[in-house]
Amino acid sequence: MLVYNSQTHKKEEFKPIDEGKVRMYVCGPTVYDQIHIGNARTFLSFDVIRRYLQYKGYEVTFAQNLTDVDDKIINRANEEGRTAAEVAEEYSNAFIEQMHRFGILDPDIRPRATREIEAMQQMIQTLIEKGHAYAADNGDVYFSVRSDHNYGILSGRELDQLRAGERVEVNDQKRDPFDFALWKAAKPGEPSWPSPWGDGRPGWHTECCAMIHRYLGTPIDIHGGGQDLVFPHHENETAQAMCAWGRPLANVWMHTGMLRVNGEKMSKSLGNFFTLKEILDKYPADAVRLLMLQTH
Image (cartoon, rainbow, N blue to C red; front, side, top):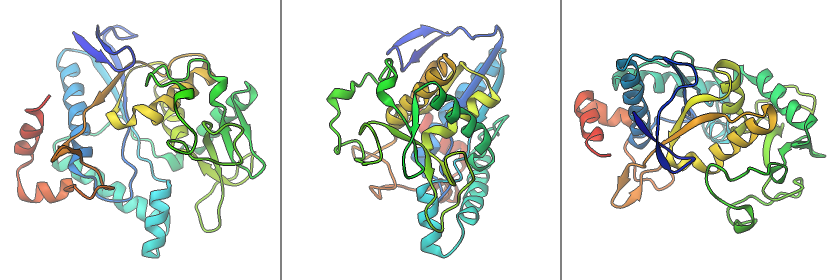
């Protein structure tokens, strides 16, 4: 069986780390709204891949997270006069309900970011001790991107080709514009947890890496997600794993293409989306699955 590995940019024979077993992780949603059908196409693609691996006789352990603390969730909560936890719970339940309606198998492991804070803090502490991260004066903790000589191995991007301020947030707390937050210091009214660096919450890139290491071990066989996550999210994930544990996060990286509408990527920011719930209220799930699966 040949699979296309996003990291090597070629098709390779699939060889699991442990014969007959596959450990697989796919990035889940940030739960601040109903997911759109572009998101759903990614989850459908990996549902089919997972089912095919099982059909071929592999024992598959499949994990998918819920990002239930994030700026988008906090902003939604503030707009609606609710707590971030209430917003996250509503849309976590909504996501699971729509996945069931769409015929997507439940993951074997579904960690939620807010319940994995300790594992994230342990990883951050390891990175600090190894010289790959530092605490800023304001209580943020940043990953030192230039300390990782392999940075760019997944996306193929070179740091010096990315100009600060265009694709990277400029922040005077960082030693380098390309450094990214592992831990964000608490702001008034935001959810936070105690830590050795002060009260705060994890950065988005921190979550998946720590959860994969805790539940599946590293490296895993397959890490999946949408194409839009290759950089910076997955690049930052694999950088943390290599620097913390000296091992790649995954042997094979697989990314689905974007669902397009009139030549543009479907996204909430562009407003050109339909929610999965809207579509499943109108059409049978099997018909929607078939329609999406007709395109490579």
